[in-house]
Length: 307
Image (cartoon, rainbow, N blue to C red; front, top):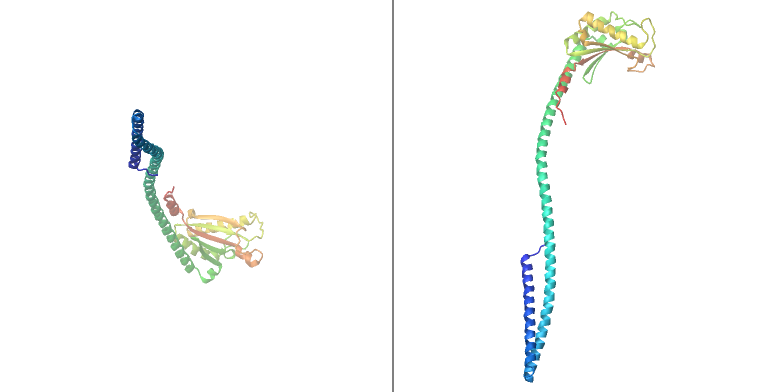
């Protein structure tokens, strides 16, 4: 609600003028009444009639002034109420303005802080992108070496050897799977004579790639075995893996620090043990060649920290 203070002032002044007019009218009536009393005894009938008409006119004016005064008083009261409402609204607007100003100041502060956080986030994203690029480059390098290693190994083996050697690259790791009948004497963990040539070719590749770790893993079928110093298939698989490790170390100069012997026993089959062919495939020794994790671990240590 908007109140025009000039209009309110004018209405108030008008009310005051009406009051003054009312006062003057009352004085006139008193004077005339007094004059009437004094002159009644000596005035002529014509004069009396004239005075009576003046009196009637003054009564009418008096009544009009009285009504006008009541109307003006009502107007003044209404204007005063409107003025009070306007003052109240003004106070509410002041409170609202103060609240809005506070919200604006807070928003400006938050915006400034947000700009700082965005800048920090951009720096973190750039650092993360650099780290991811390094990881990708390291992986690409590893993949390239794995492919080269696999190609060199495949070219070095004869067609007959490749029939009993399976070479795969899975998730950055080179798997060389050798059948047990080409490596060991039947039911034994001793290396047979025909295995030496194949192991020598594999050893040469291993020595050419000195940044790789080598795990020799023995696997068997599920047929139980019980011989002197061989309690079960766990023992047989471990002894066979150990025999290959020692062959690579002692006869072909592979650094033993790069070698690990392990056993999976009968619990890592790649075929069903219900058939002779399946059991033959499960009896195998895997030479697992993996890139050293030092480079990746160093990269992980350098990874940017995120909040």
